[in-house]
Every structure is written in structure tokens, then in C-alpha cells.
Amino acid sequence: MSYYWLFAALTLLELILFILLGRFFIRLRQSESALTELQNSQAELLEKLSLNARLEDELLRSFKERQKELLQLDNRLRESSAQLRALLGQAEQVSRSPHFLREVIINGNRNGLSLMELARQTGLSVDEIQLILSQAG
Image (cartoon, rainbow, N blue to C red; front, side, top):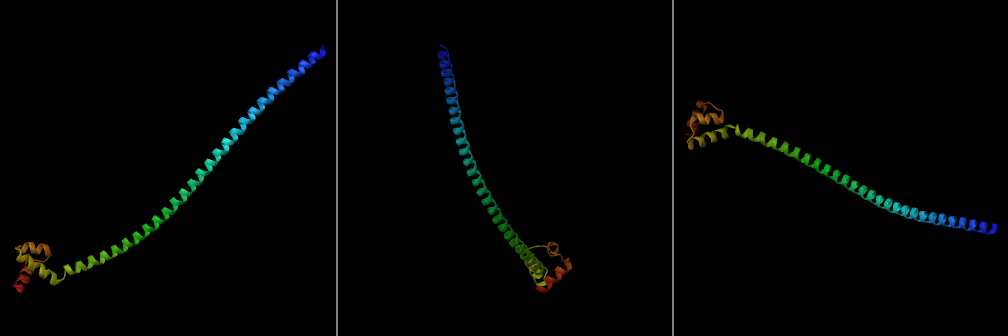
């Protein structure tokens, strides 16, 4: 009879070991699926990082191009500013030339402007305006 209990105990022990082995394999499968999921997530993360790196490179390249364009525009603006200053200087010289002032005074007199208005516009005295009009008339 002791063999019967021994046989029953060994069978029970084998059954417990079988159940434990089954649970071990189930957990092993779960670990494998979790590991596979982590690997897939890692691959997606690497793809996103690669995309972000490409976008950053593109952004930097675009920024550098814009910087070059801004520098070119700044240079052109400085050149245009210098040209405008030169033109303003020439216009000032022309507006202060005696011939131009004479034409402004004569045309203003023809248009009915008073001597005071002509003097204010040209920066000359009323006597100078009268002299110029008398020479022209």
C-alpha cells in the first residue's frame, strides 16, 4: 500500500510540475509578445527620430537660405539708400540753383501767388523776388 501512496504522491508532484511548466510557458509567450511589441515600438521611434532629424536638417537649410537672402536684400537696400541719398543731394542742388528758383518765381507769379508766398516758398526776400520778376518781365 505504501507503493500506492508513493505513486499517488509522485503523480501529484508531476501534475504540479506540469501546471508550473505550463504557466512558465504562458509567461514566456507573454514576455515574447511584450518584447516584440517593444521592438516594434522602438522601430517606430527610430523612424520618427529619423524623420525629425531630416525635418531639422531641412529647417536649418531653409534658415540658412533665408539668411543669405536677407543679407542680399540688406546689401541691395543699402545700395538703394546710397543712391537715393545721392539723388536727394542732386535734387537739393537743383532746387537751390538760381535758374530753378527763377523759374519757380516766374511760374508762381503767373499762377497768382503773392510776393510773400513766393518768398516763403523759395526762402528769398521780397526784394529779391521783385528783382527777379523785374529782370524777367
